[in-house]
Length: 114
Image (cartoon, rainbow, N blue to C red):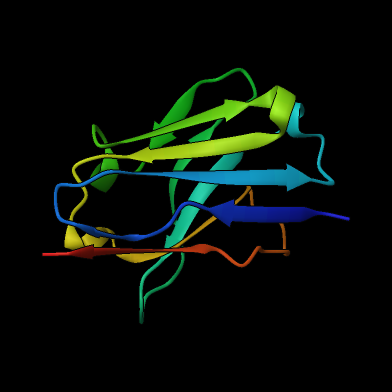
């Protein structure tokens, strides 16, 4: 049974930083590409970063240079370090495999105030 538990979201001021964590179970974690997705109010969920099993990472243009995705295969955990946050980063953030599974965790709310 797949479980994805996201944490670390908070209310921060623009320019601030947050580190999100996602603990995964029920997947062969070290063999799969993992991603961080976000969904802002009234918008579709979008992939913002993904990390391949070997450690290579890719980012959507809007977060390049500000967000860093990483993984700890021993802990079945993926992280998203978010720096220089902007109000447009406000969203619920989710982790999932890439391509995503039908199952989604509860997400973690990130709110960036201007």
